[in-house]
Length: 222
Image (cartoon, rainbow, N blue to C red; front, top):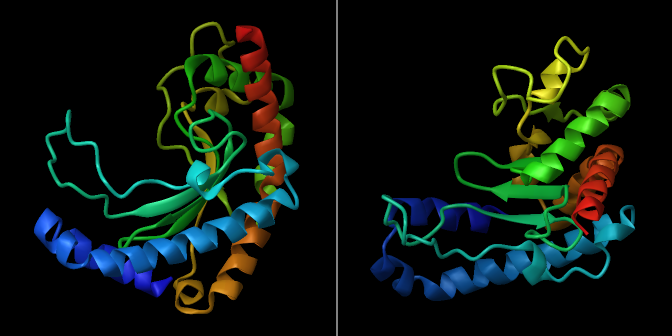
């Protein structure tokens, strides 16, 4: 994956249409490589999480072109890329498994990022009922840590204050992350894929609990 990181690094220093046009063939090459990796990643995750079976690469990958219509930053291209494997794809609203490639740092993420309000409420209700199991699932992963940055200062409305899992209830995202070892990025694609799949397999219990909460939320909407 070093070619992908190298291209994104150059792009971050030359984020303009002229440079990108001159390096379009290089981009097509690394995009092809990423999509091949994504296809293998989807199949590998489906082996232990059948809920993602049948997803396409397009369901799980992102365009490099930025939507700059409402942004002060008019840079036309993203300087990162990634693959998010979750039920119904990256826009389905479910918890899943994400790998992020960026020159400033590559990492793995598992969980739910920016859930819809009704989903977040359902996750918090799951915390009330099964917070111990959720923390145990985090502890059982291969070195992932709970992301605590995006949190409320107080217990959310309609939830009990002083609960033993109050810190979890105040989270606005519920996810765990782990930095990718640079040695894996410099090695073979096969060794990277094997390591990533092993890490994601260790997060399955947590993702499954979260998606149970997502399903409850969506059922209420019907």
